[in-house]
Length: 255
Image 1 (cartoon, rainbow, N blue to C red):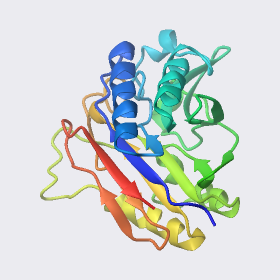
Image 2 (tube, helix red, strand yellow; image 1 turned 135 degrees about the vertical axis):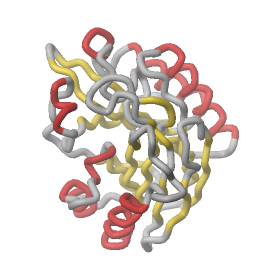
Image 3 (cartoon, rainbow, N blue to C red; image 1 turned 30 degrees about the vertical axis):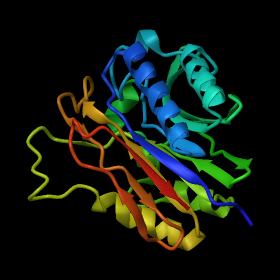
């Protein structure tokens, strides 16, 4: 039987185009999560450069590379698994990617986002593989944001069929600048599909979004608003992060 796992949800501020500031903030969250006794921390999508930021054309890096090495070092120093979204360069292509890093600083798997929004395809190339990795906490599956799309979830279902126990998902959930959360509360559009696949495959599903502003692409000026979500293996809501472009926080769950 897989042992209990303590997961930190790092709902961090991502400053568009500010690589060093974002890496520093991520490493600080990694160390803080370890201090709180966490086994794994999940960080947001594109936490290095920000989702759809045009600087990716010049600053995207191979994996492994400089940014992943910084995260690997922090994981090893803190003895904690790290899941994070990174902007990957492979030849002349750029991918919206994510990694699972072990507690000894080794990259176990890399995932390239498959279900990218159409306008973002001007920047990112679509991935073509799904990956899982065995850990002492059970099998970890990796997806990115709209890979677990609310309108239908072949990726989540496939990862469930592959035996995933922890489905971990870096995200960048954004709303229009004039969105009123009191009139139209954000989050149910993710809670419903997450709960369905969690219950179907008896797995925990965790989606962690950044906070801050979107810069670049069709959603330029939209707000990333956190609202990170964790759903337990019976489909129950374990955690729902604070809403808002300034709502940086570290949420801890145990499953």
